[in-house]
Image 1 (tube, rainbow, N blue to C red):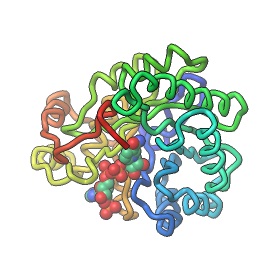
Image 2: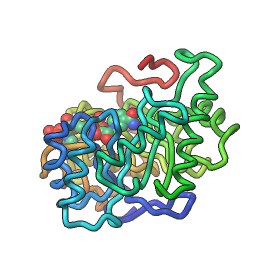
Image 3: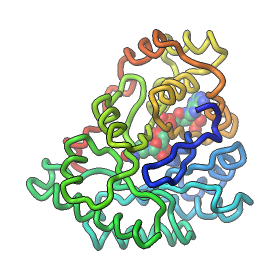
Length: 283
Ligand SMILES: NC(=O)c1ccc[n+]([C@@H]2O[C@H](COP(=O)([O-])OP(=O)(O)OC[C@H]3O[C@@H](n4cnc5c(N)ncnc54)[C@H](OP(=O)(O)O)[C@@H]3O)[C@@H](O)[C@H]2O)c1
């Protein structure tokens, strides 16, 4: 990737921007202003979800941005309370209405149902949810469908039932919280891998080793973290409420980390002290 305007091509031929804008923890009231700023500085991929409760605000930004709908790439996700075929369909319709759109570019299953919560039913629940996404895709209601937080064994379980392969996997990934096996497996399956919390929810930004690397290039910790993700073939989804920092996070295409620097960043400890394991979550 040579610029923020570059794209990934999904396995169905649809192109998507190589970096996106995150909106978790952005209120519905703030979402319109924040997303208008993001679009103004150049973001075209906006990542939301039913559970973020900000789709209406984002819809207002889309409608008033002056950028054509076709230039934007809007992602939403079905939340865990709406797994299964019928509830996923309901959730999709509600997201679409709140966003004020006629289609969504990318629709994801937010988290896999796991055995801890659902025992032997987990695989079938994921298959039923996926079947809804397949039907939405085949009815041209969405341009692409995919997964979030799925580990390789969840994907394998899904593939036993799937007619259409997932095109994207969106996973937690930042220095100190790597999911190398899931990244490798998802890329092998031809998926685009999006990195959520690419800045460790802001906790990577005081890391001194990362700062020392950034100083060599005149780049901030945030920019180094995003570059580290891009050089691993991922699509980062940074979030900021501040227009200067939004713009800074797009300015990551004019330097190249060396293999040694990549390795130093990979070796950093998890600054958040925790991570979400899809096999362990109970929400
Ligand atoms: N699929 C999932 O399960 C899942 C889960 C979590 C998140 N996500 C997605 O991933 C997106 C990003 O993750 P995130 O929101 O958790 O956090 P993040 O992007 O890792 O970090 C955001 C934090 O970093 C700060 N920040 C951003 N750019 C900065 C810069 N250049 N310099 C200094 N500080 C900077 C922000 O503060 P300011 O606002 O003050 O700049 C904010 O506090 C989410 O918004 C959401 O779209 C998906």
